[in-house]
Amino acid sequence: MLFSAIKPMTVSPGREPFDDHDFIFEPKWDGVRILIHKQGSRIEAYTRSGRAVTHKFPELQDALGAIRTSSAILDCEGIVLRDGIPAFDDFMYRDRISQSVKIARAVHTHPVTFVAFDLLYTDREHLNEPLVDRKKRLSDSIDATPVLMPTLFVETHGKALFEMMKERQMEGIVAKRKGSTYVPGNRSSEWLKIKVVKSIHVEILGYKIDPFELVIGLNFRTVKHKPVGVVATGITTADKELFLTLAGPLCTVREGNTQWMEPRLCCRIDYLDRTDMHQLEMTTFRGFLLDMRAEDCVWPY
Image (tube, rainbow, N blue to C red):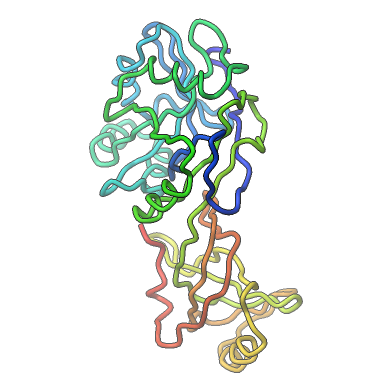
């Protein structure tokens, strides 16, 4: 099991925050899943797909001393904090660079913290132990440092933690049944992610004709007018009629079911999730922003 790729157990979507004596609740960290393997003086890191990324994170050598057991497999989230809040794009920068000089510089400009939330192995496997037992082992097995720390969790009070995460502009919470075992590669119905709804101003790059959907975009540091998804929920008949009137003079080319247009119109949407490539998911239309410039619709770094 040590130093071999393990597909981590993943969460299922949840709806509303809840309180339950049979669950613990953790913050949902906005980073990338990393599994850390240690044996003696050797330490390695793997992504959820099994890609070895040890060379990208020299900080792991500092984490080595924080793990008390001689052997361990830790299930973690790799994050980069900015003003106390995880910045997903900052971690993706760390994952993207490969030149040793840039990596050495990024250790100081984009320092990584590995937030551990599960312990899969020490001197033996712990996969079939209840979560609460693995949590106790995890607490006993690592010392909290700026590079490696166990995640915060609370019992029972999921609603209060959700409100705290919302106030701190975090992604949300993860609810986990206390007795849950760890099944690698399984999407567990006993682990639920409950996300905070986020709002963002987007530009409209075009629309789908049948069914009707707005194609939405954002401006990034290196890419302008990047499509980031579609939105249909929340658009009323009056919204559609107004949009088609305004969009007429802006239309450019039609490609199949998509009518593209000059990026001149903006709107506000809510979304619940986004992919690693910044595609916004579970979107809801909230209204046009007729006085906003499209170039001001930017991804919030």
